[in-house]
Length: 349
Length: 282
Ligand SMILES: Cc1ncc(C[n+]2csc(CCOP(=O)(O)OP(=O)(O)O)c2C)c(N)n1
Image (tube, rainbow over all chains, first blue to last red; front, side):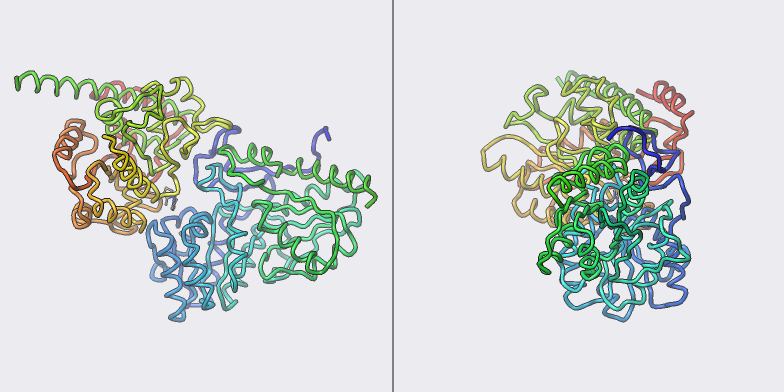
């Protein structure tokens, strides 16, 4: 498909530090749309939650400023614990806090939380249902730093741990609401973090986040998008564009990867069999796999196309370049959806 | 006789200072392209890299996989800007390629990896380097090679447990072919290490782990040379050389600026930085 994309395309990076074609210099290169944004929604929401609940403590592993945890540290210095660059220790200490009745929120980047501290999360936090909240920055391709910093496998890793709640919010609205929900939830949680200037995709007046509940954001009978995390913003843009082309697409947003809202998926795919999943993560082990598990268990056949990072370590580079390179930008989503639809209709679906 | 030796040592220092300045020039060139790019780290570590790549290390720039080479192991991926400068200066790739630093499709990534020729491993997920250096030191020793392994790690990495697991192993196996240079620049992401998670007394810790230790001014080329010479006399123990360095060294504008992991640099300051570097002591 050629021609220009009419809907607002997603814009990335801090305007003053990003130049097209160059890896963002800030470790925190994160999405910022041309539209409305909220600054540090996680940090502010955590402060609000901690004003209500005095048992909340905050921890970080030398990434306070880069995970918006600094806002909590400034507001509640006596309840903030800097553990230095030591991710295993971060999760271990958080588990210890949980076992003394506190509600620890521990932040680092998702690669370091999940890859380095995996055992500490599985055994220290999840096995005994310790009330640990892991806040994990730079999910997927929100950093240009290559294989060491791009969390392309964290959802797969975390989804495979029993007892753990796994959340990938799509915007500032959902991030803030999810913080409130997980602070009240009793048990271990892994939440991906969008930080800095975070776009608003969902209307805070009408949207309401619930752990374990998928939300149908748009209804359409031709095609079903199922998405998580920041890909939902792009998928909504793609669906709006497709509507202009006469293609009606549903958008089911699943921010809780675990526990997975199987019934929402089944009720959608019973009506719309041609499905495109989109996630800011490897196409194996995350959302697409969860969808595949759900339909397989139910014995339902669907025609599935998976959008996300292929089975590789990604390049370094600017975020627009990477999104295009791995076909995860809005324009590529539109192209992929149309190709998939045409192929399936040609096959008689 | 001593006179000649002294003179040649003096000459070496003069030459290496010129090299270090040249490396710093490359660092500024790269950092300016991306608007920041860890200029502070690259400038701070230029003296060590000059000593290693243009004096101490045995390697072949056109045969990087020469099995008897000494190995430089960069734990701290974001310091790659310094290593790119050294590798280009050594002829591993063309100097002009430095202009692609951090660009889409370039092999000179902002956080370096083994995609770049001359990188022995992928650092950047901090705390990996010393373990791999221990493995390499064991490997070359088992093969009966004379190769030595030089690991550069940061003060921030002293907080990772893996660093100390590796330190224990290095001493346990009496790896006198292993050298750890610890860049104590007094900075990490959230502030100075003494506030974030104090790792002092650093030298005593390495000594307690069984290493031969020294602590020197890491921006003083003669001091680095002497420390390496002294370490080479010590057998049956790995060597920790703690370097007190200054981020942004060589450019007073950056040296004096308040900084932590990043130095804030305005677009109109690069020409001042370049001028200050040129007029500074060689
Ligand atoms: C395992 C791991 N945890 C966290 C980070 C994120 N991070 C990148 S640089 C940095 C600060 C490290 O300080 P130091 O290594 O002393 O570097 P300097 O600030 O001196 O450049 C941190 C926390 C990382 N790269 N790897």
